[in-house]
Image (cartoon, rainbow, N blue to C red; front, side):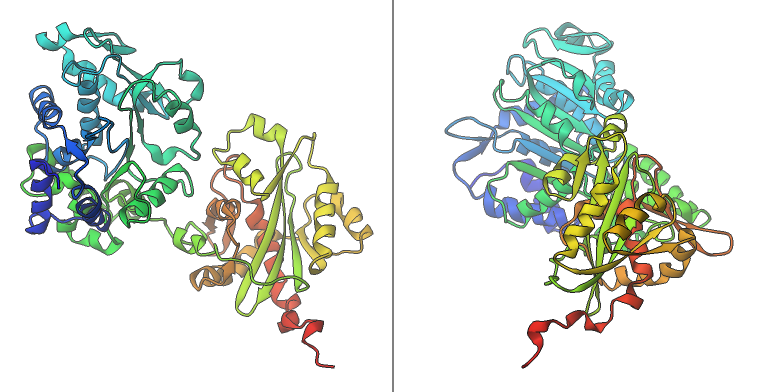
Length: 544
């Protein structure tokens, strides 16, 4: 058994009802008690912990109990090797929770003589230079006019260097090309909700390991990018907290409301922002007042609720009047395909632009479920010019899409896919809009397919919208495990016109593609007419 007074104090605050914790932090305490604090092969380095607390409270600000709690695990080591037990730290909470302040002090401390590791360089990475400079400038300003720090650190507008340890702190944008070979001891990734893939982390983490006890900190509030890097991290965190992965070296400290209804009771706000736990500091009181004012304003301006819930309460919430379905319902499409061979299906095609994306698919009806099997074609030249911030290569490896190196997407790609599918499934009819259909009409009809045109595609959106909403709500849509299709669906912006009719548009014209969803809608338009209950009828069922 091991113990640390700051850890014990934080656990005791919860056990005695003095603070409220969300589900993830309750699981964290249980995980730590069962799998970490019960060990006898690790130890808290009390000197490093106490020095960090003194350093921070002397040069920065008084630390809250939750910040001391986190700090203790930064300096938890194996007895035999001296290697740090936790190498990655995921710190998520509502805006204003002091994430950057803690990171500023910690970054400064890790480069100092008090930490004691020579050339323990620190990189602070964010999507924009202004964000990356937040903690860097806080450290820069902390050094100013403080004689002991001015003697210990040499600072410029681009780096801060400790004179004794030669450790360097730099800020960097997430552009991989900005990494110039610095041998980092620690990398801090700010506002990670904006990362669509792991590319940034992969590049910057490659510099770790050359200095002992490397660390990575992932900080931020939640955001609007789904199935991006943050969602992967949150899934990984839950595997740790639920005891499913005991070999993971990540420490997940996640603060959020447990459900949207809790926002109505201000005493629950501390679940999302631990600064709001009593007794509140002067800073926390002022912040609490500001957040209260923002919440009151929602009564007159409910359009800001999505931002408030996501950024202040760290609980992403979408405006259901602007999206096809809640993310949980989109995720629920991830169910295995039932047996589909020889079943009747209807084809869907979206070919709005021959210069970027094209989507094809087959729609089946199995009992109450609509099953959508799809594939996409993407032009390499388009990908080279536009940063989609999507894991295209990963989706290609999963055979969800094909990247074609052609001036335009050749019609043969579409025709050949439908021909191959017809060998397996009962496919005869394909539905598409009239835009550019002349390009594929002759080729598909030459192969014996029947094509049906939708002369006004936007007109069918309003007619289908109630059905689509119901299908998602009742979990009657199956995509199989298709993150590309989930991406398409989540990219759809539902525009409500003045006459109350709905249209399915793109949230971003260039980077948020919806082709697969539009192909699905085209097929759905005729699904109930074409896909009858005979779908279950197979010759093997006949008794001779």
